[in-house]
Amino acid sequence: MPIKLFRFMIVLLVTVVVFGRMCIAGTWIDDFSDRTLRDWGGGRRNHEFSTGVVGGHFYYRGIVEQAFCHMENRGLGKIQDFSLQLKFMVRNLRDLRQGFLTIDYSSFNEETWNTDGIMQFSWYPQGEPKINIMDVTIDCFEQEGDAFFPQTAAIDSFAFEEKVWYTLRIAREGNQYTFSMGDVILFAEDDSVSMGTIDLLFFGRCTVWLDDFIVTGPDVPNGGPGFLGVNPLAEHVTTMWGKLKAQY
Image 1 (cartoon, rainbow, N blue to C red):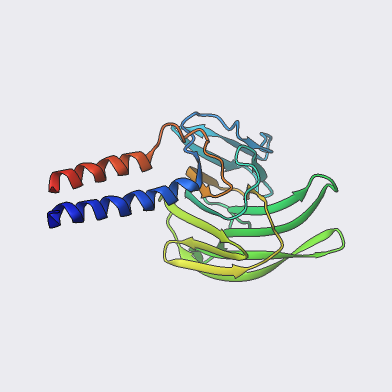
Image 2 (cartoon, one colour):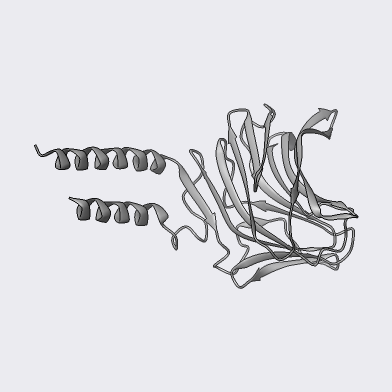
């Protein structure tokens, strides 16, 4: 067997194994291309804020300082180990005393109607004079009676600019959590959430734009409004196959 052909077969075999493992995990994508929020429950419109989809991007606009919006991803459902990626952009920042965005990963017991555990990933401005610096935190919650109290497990700062898109990432494996934004990477351990849902919480008087909400994991269903329109795995395999054939 010629050496080049043997190498070609090895490379192809490795490619199939790698992508086969990737296919085991499901992928849920909302790129907001459907111009609706049908998979997100809990959001509402009132005099305090407004939400919607414009130009394929989700937006939250807080009108007053006390504005608060909670949106649960009902399409994704309950998941365990996962990797989340989300693009965001801040505009019209006016209130420096409240957080911009918090992502909750929490478990709710439908039988007892009680929350069993909460993990919270947040970013919020430090305030004057550091208007372009935000704190990035992972908070674990300790339960006392029926109440939960946040305990900061990790914190760092991140420099940002308005009207610039950034990408945040959250990953969970067992009781290990990672939260990254730019070159900021936070780690935490917690056992309170065995399997939970992902919620978005917006605070304050500002405008936040979101796009390309992507979650992968063994418990993640294949779906979401952007799933059928984007198939990077198939495109990558086709490109790889073409390059290998061209070489040999």
